Image 1 (cartoon, helix red, strand yellow):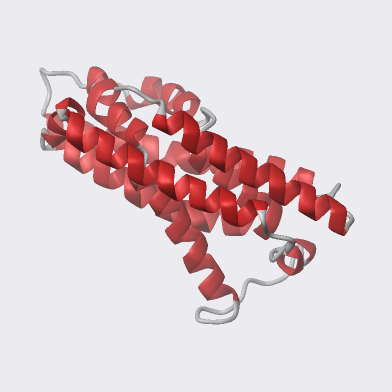
Image 2 (cartoon, helix red, strand yellow; image 1 turned 90 degrees about the vertical axis):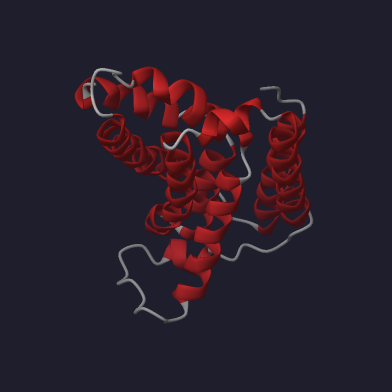
Length: 214
């Protein structure tokens, strides 16, 4: 095990386009980079659960179970379709005040921004925990970097921590790109187009998820 060698691999995997990374992009557009980074706590929490499951050997069992994989796939697809339908029919841009307030001091805990951040964290968590591809990552791909000659628990802890940190790097990249996209949205028509594009992506991701195989 070499955490330094694994780090660029982890970042490359974390940067792979998918529902959570698009969520980070979307959060960057609507709520700013800072809020997107906070929301990633939910994603990391869901992946930490999968990591723990894989560490104790249950990940391979879930991966081998057709029923478990299918159940997670359908729940994840349904959630993506719901997010897509809601975004497609929206004419609002709720994060406008946060994005335009660049450089402003963060709200105090429990202040007006706190409920929104909790919702963003919950959304990232639900996208992560209902993504069967995450099961594949941690149950099938991740163990390949484990050296059987060394204690497995410590390796899972170190490599897992590296990967979870890589997810924050990924969010920073996608949210920063979202921030730049936000600068060109200047009209209500632009907001509607953005919402439809967001909805279309989420629904498309849901369709791809339904077609996914183990």
